[in-house]
Every structure is written in C-alpha cells, then in structure tokens.
Amino acid sequence: MILHPYPTVTQRTRDDCGAAIVSSILRKHNIKHQYSRLCRELNVSNRTGTEEPDIVNFLNSKGFRAWMTYDMTVDSLINFIDSEIPVILIVQAYSRSKKEDRYEGLTNYGHYLLAIGHDGDRVIFMDSGLPFGSYGYLTKAELEKRWYYVSEDNRKLRVGIVVEPPKKNNLIHIR
Image 1: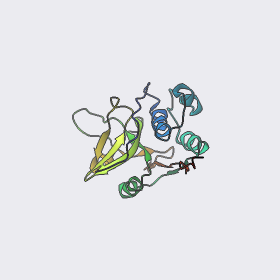
Image 2: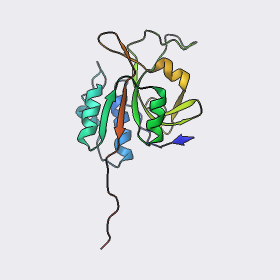
Image 3: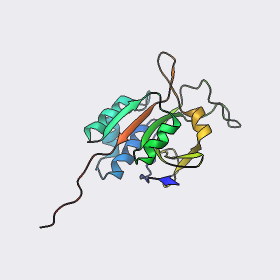
Image 4: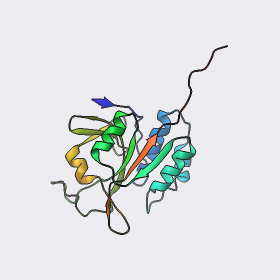
C-alpha cells in the first residue's frame, strides 16, 4: 500500500468540503491558519461551495504549485500519488438511490476529495465528510463512475487540482 498521510479535517457545513481539504494540506505543511478565515479567503458560499480557481489561487499564494487539469485519468492520478503529490478531485458525492450506485447524469452533488494513497484496486482519500481520524477509499471502478464535473456547456470533465508542495529547506546550520 502507498499512503502519504494527511491530517483529517471534518467539514463544518455541507458547503465547505473544499476549505476542509485545503486546511488538511496546510496542516500537513505546518502552515498556520484559522478555519473561519480560510473559508472567507476561499469565498466559500452556501450556493456554490468553493470554486476550483479560488483553491488554486489560494494554494499558489501560499507557496504551493497548484494547477487544474480537466482530463486526468486514474493512471495519471496514481502516478502523482506515487510521486508524493496529492490531487484534489471533484466527485459526485451521492447516488440517486441508496440501494444502487447510480451517478449518471447527476450534476449537483459535487464533493472534494484529496487523493493520498492507493493499493491494488483502491484509491485512498482524505474525505472531510467522514468521521474525524478516518480515511476513505473508492475502488478504481467506483472512481471511474463518480469522478466527473459537468461544465456550463454540459461536458463531463475529470477535474483534478494537482498540488505540488512548496520547496522548503528544513536543514539549518546550527551555530
């Protein structure tokens, strides 16, 4: 199993999953922040949640190298994880039915996940919707069904926000 642990952060409302994911990334890299201020800086709203460009711009302002991709594959996601580079995904959080996995055509249940590991047929995530201290996983087949965002012109996009950590020199000469 490949797992690059990230702090678990539980979202406080149904609209702040993006802020919770960013908070986890900041905590991993010892960047102090206040969650309520972070939500304001990311423009979290109860209408749209957190917009992807706000996440990218905020992370870049903190020294990360973050960018969006619209056609990522599961294989390329695994390659980033293997390189210790987390990726924020937008997936459909809920199906139409509790009894079966039906995500086709859903457009209004977007949810951010942070991909941090994999093993065999599973991809492992820090999911702010899970109980504190827990990681979640989706099989690759489940991820293939749920990993999409529908654009304004009705195209299904595989959105990934790649987040390269800041380059820090933590080695200090003791004098």
